Structures are given as C-alpha cells and as structure tokens.
Length: 333
Image (cartoon, rainbow, N blue to C red; front, side, top):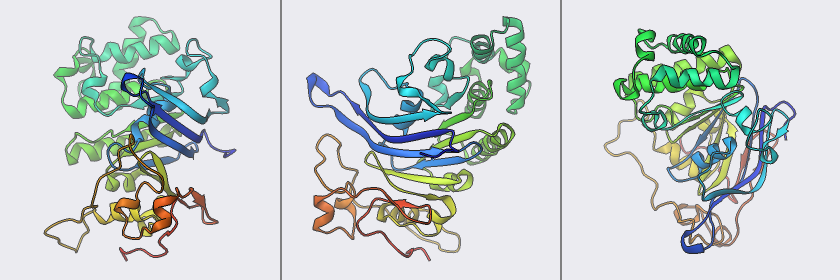
C-alpha cells in the first residue's frame, strides 16, 4: 500500500447473492489500486466487467444482495470496511463530505420531486449544519460555479426541466459542494453529445486542480480516459488485467485484451470501412471455469492460459499485467 495515496484498495472482492439461495456470483475479484491527491485513475473495460460495483463498494453503497467478500479499503488512513454506517465518525460522515460520487445517470440519481437547489442545499445542511436559507444561497453559488446559466432560476427547477448537460452539471455541483478529497466519476459523460462531453471533462479537471482531489474516473470510452487519466487500470471479467501510467499504456499495451480494446479506437490518417471488434463475449460469472478469463477470446492463449489464472504482476517500470504472454511491443506502432 502506498504511503502517499489518499485511497488504497487491496485485494477487493465483491459477490452478489444468487436467486433461490444459489451460490454467490462474483462481480469483482482481487482488485487493487491506489490514488494520490490530485491524480486521476481511469478504470476501463467492457460493460459488466465490474467497474461500477467497485466504485459503489468504495462508498459502501452496494445493493442489498451485494457484499464485499474480501480485501481492504483504506481512505485517508482509515479502514473504511470496519467503520460503522451511522454518525459523523462512520460512513455517513465520509460520504458527501470527504468522498463523493457522480453517478452514471443523473436523471435517475436526482430526486424528481425536489428542486435541484434543495437537493444541493441538503448537502450543506447535513455536513455543514447551515441554516436552510444559507444552504440554498450556497447551492446557487455551486450551480454558478459549474457553469449553469441563471443559477437562481435553475435552483428552483426540477430535474425534468433541465437538459442532460445541465443535470450532469447539477450532479457535479452536488458532489463537489463539500470539496471532497475523493471524487468517483462513474461514466459521467456517456449520455451527452460530444460538445457537452468535452465541457464536462474540462470542468471536472478544472475543479480537480482547484481542490487537489483524487479522482476515480470510470468509463468504457478509452478516448475519454486518455484525455483525463494519469494512470489506467483495465478490468476484464471482474479482475484488473493491466495497470500502467496512461501514456505508457496507450503507447504500448501489454495485455492482449488492452491491445484489442485500443485497436478498436478510430485513428487519424487510417480510414477504415469497418472498425475491428473483439471476437466472442465476456464469460458469464455464474459458469466461468478455471484459467484466464480472456483465454477463450485471446489469439495467444495456450493450454496454460486455460488451466491457470495469471496473477497481476508488477515490474520495475511501475506497470502491472496479469498475463502469461504479455506483449512486449505494440501492434499499433
């Protein structure tokens, strides 16, 4: 574990209870990473690989049938898995105040029957114990800070009265109201058009620099992650299969899955009628057998890959890869 990191995750495993008392279904296994203040870790992978449940576990917001089955989470020197839920000294005191989250869909994350201003004001009331009128004024200032025009009017609006970009900005205002040390951004630009997406990314980076926040940026969009991340962790079938500084990972991916993901990106000067796709599908966690989870889709897999699970092994260059046949050169060069 890093002495300089704000959050350290070590060996985190998550499972969901099966139906009719069947065996628990693993959603994430042996996940480890750390993020220092002011730095951004990009967590990438296909849908269903375990990115969002990893984020929810950091906040201890897993659904009722989900549970953390192993590992440690240390935030600012505190072991969060052993903290009580209630009280200022528990998770209630951490969530919103010291760690905050931008959820995938602001339309469903925002309360449809409360005004945007009241929802942001509630954060100030709970964590700073401000009077309601003062909290509402602070909410208007936050809406202005995230670039929403006519913030006083928008503070009186309900979520359905805002555009997708405005709802996302309102979510960011709510998440950053207490100037948290850690921001978890779960697919914050997925449903937005390219112009608004760029504005939101610029806003997150600007506020991060202003507050020196650590950011966990979750996305399946590698182009977006390349724009914001200092380090990237690639997840596949519930495990991190590669972790490296962003520039190194995109320049020379070492795991075959990472290389296949990057190969699907459009490249300037290389017009293609059809973009490459990764053959096959992610294995079903309920019936997954032994061996590397990517073996059935990997062109390099041999008998060893089908029999044994490779460990995530770090090297002297601050890179880690879980593969028996890591690539030494990039097929993209």
